[in-house]
Image (cartoon, rainbow, N blue to C red; front, side):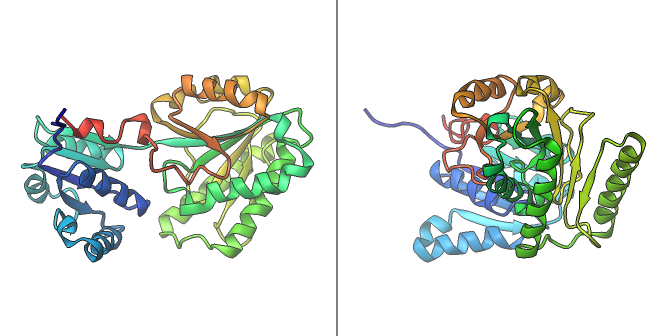
Length: 323
């Protein structure tokens, strides 16, 4: 039988600049459907998409000719309309307002694939909380938190630690702070704009005040900088976005069966859950997380490495682009 599947003639890719590799993923999707691609590079990262196309050209110039990378400032309707008006499909990344603006200007009959704001977290069962495993667990968690400074959707904003193991939530938070400092010494966090660093200081101050009032919110932080922050939050268990840039909450839970409740308010935005537990607990815990809206479950330490076959945000990667 003949294969009559057809991809879009032109895909307009509107990229965000938080994680460079995402640009490659989007362009590869377009090439796999044999579509031409107009790529709007982010002003935060105008270089990587162009270098990626240049790398393709070194192998096969004809394939590279299917892609054009052009950076311009977003929000200029005249330019955005020109970039979008002939698109059969639009793949866009970014915040809610940016995606809404692109959707407003995109052709009504174009396929529209969006990847908006998402939140991820980690969960550790009591069986995994042994003294022997503490160093490896905290090193893996520090890697997931710190790589790309939490700018990507797969980085955890909170770590839920089940009580009753050899290691208490407080002990885990202390060990995680040490791992975060070691990561910082090896891979320093990016320099921040003044207002971003000020927000971290504000959040630290708020948590410090809560701890002073209740004697229940220890704060572990880098000395003399905003490089990393670990908050032990034993009271308010609900999942909430952090202020990013290596700022994470460690929250104790009596039982991980409570996870659907504590993450429930974030259901539309849930992305990845990194877990560490006993072999017996892995399958039931995974099923619980999937039913709660999580679209990817992996081991702690692997959150930043989704496989090439990963369904971003739980969506099929190519099917929406094919007819």
